[in-house]
Image (cartoon, rainbow, N blue to C red; front, side):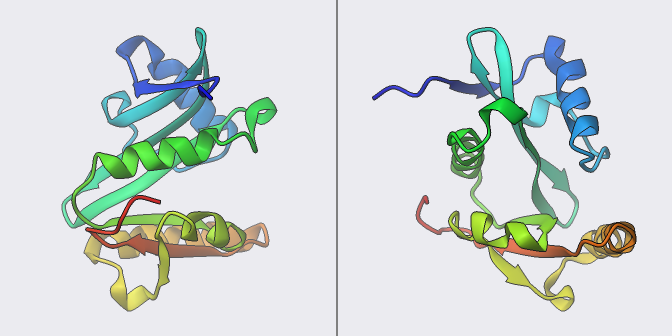
Length: 150
């Protein structure tokens, strides 16, 4: 069976849509560059986005969002698999604690603060402070290089 959506690299004219989806989901608005994104489309409509953010001390899976009426259809998972397939090193991600089982399906495992590379520690501290204000908890997860695809 063919998926009802297509995953492809983002295009420059889609930058505003990508940024609007990030704002709408209250995701980290920093280090957002359309060139790093994959988008899921149905026809001309973007129904999902995700990127790998490059940093000096590592790479982060981030900015994953799926439009509300297309959630629970496999789009998010397909974007994650496509992003992982393009990587050859470890990946970090920051997520709310209740999402841990979802990311575990793709080989991500929770890590402690001592396992977080340099510049990611500040991001973790800021994320923790902000999300605690609204009653949530941020965790850091890591996928090691060389794991088989999920």
